[in-house]
Length: 276
Image (cartoon, rainbow, N blue to C red; front, side, top):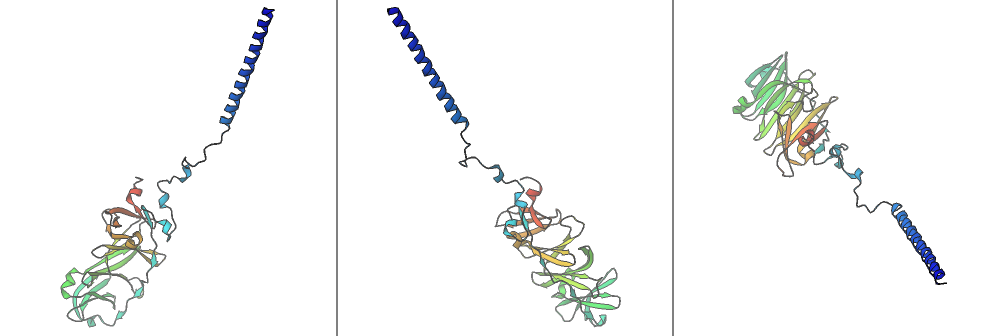
């Protein structure tokens, strides 16, 4: 009898142990299911890759909008210049007054002359016709500082006469002689002709002032346009460097940085080198 009771107790113990193990395994599987079906973390702690800017994102913009500018690029908004001023004809060359300089430029003759004892004026002769350019200096002593040359700009030939309209007031005249009558572009600044965007056509860069203020002139479909680079870049100083065909600018009183004109924009030389 005692043996039968002992065997019964062992069977009951084995059965209870098997049930307990089975329940533990079920709980483990349920826990595992919960872990594998848990949704990914959407708390925003992980950065969205689409929000990371690429190095050249800041070069994209629309002309004339605030969003088109960045620390590395400025879109230039050109405005029209009323430049085709026809030159008035002077009746006779010998009525100009006192001629102080006479210079031959190809088929044309440029005269510097005085109507009085102070101011110097300029005129240009083509064949038997003479056209008056206007005042080019304000003292006779300046006649040796007035330059006369032929230049190329906008794919056209110009007679360029550079003088002074007053103290710290340079004046540059571009005379296009292949029109009838000849036309005049007058800029109150020192100028240089340069192919800024390397397309084979030279633009005009004009600079004036102790704190250099620089503008760019271009010709688009016979429409003369200009932009003030200081205003466009919010720069205190903008200087053109002809030896490198680049600009140096001080923006928001920072140290001078190097810029390149490219496709209607001023682009940081850092970006042009691909350093970003």
